[in-house]
Length: 287
Ligand code: AMZ
Image (cartoon, rainbow, N blue to C red; front, side, top):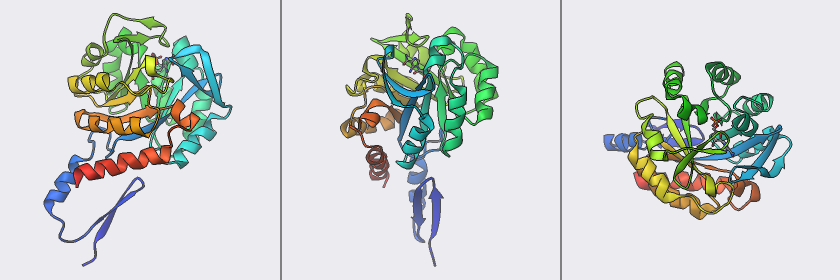
């Protein structure tokens, strides 16, 4: 009897006759039921400022490096290298508290077939609707999540499985409004507010490491993932393949992916290699 094949994203799994039910249970347990994906995601970041693709250091608006005047070309590049999701930030939007780079975001969404998660300047339902209409798959709420937690709950009701909470912290305190304002709350307390909101993930960024290639904050990321049921996406500081490797054990705590920016642009991290590592490590753990 011939086997049959399950095609999933770019991974083909051949099921041969005689495979036990246990295989299916193990296989299913490897699937993140929240995202529908089955491995740790490497999510390249495209930060937009004045229509260009930039990287900041520690979020300082004056400390920018421009990597492309045509951000959709970058999106295509990361897609072709194997990315399965893209992280896009409207930096002008985050600073101004309203969408600024929508036309570029449209071009990015139109140029690649993978899901885009987008944050920066989203404060109301109209903006949410506009971005989802445009084809954005997940929206990240940062400042408004602190200022108006009820809004997050309404948003999760309206767009189930598509709302991500953005928690950016500096020295253990959450920062909002383009990271210009620190509030008297830690990331765990902030995340706990949204335990039952229906949010599909928390993106946790260590601001002091962001754009610095100083290594991810493993302790803080692990503590957050342990403290809440919501899946966590780690961000900030990933500089090379060893850093990617160091985050893999956190998958069992509820970390579902990692965002990387400057290391990809500088070339100190090879995206295809990182994606491959995340796939092979999961398979080793499962089979
Ligand atoms: O780099 C910055 N100064 C910055 C940044 N990258 N400020 C905000 N953000 C990102 C957050 C999150 O993804 O990491 O913007 C989003 C939150 O935006 P808002 O407008 O909801 O706070």
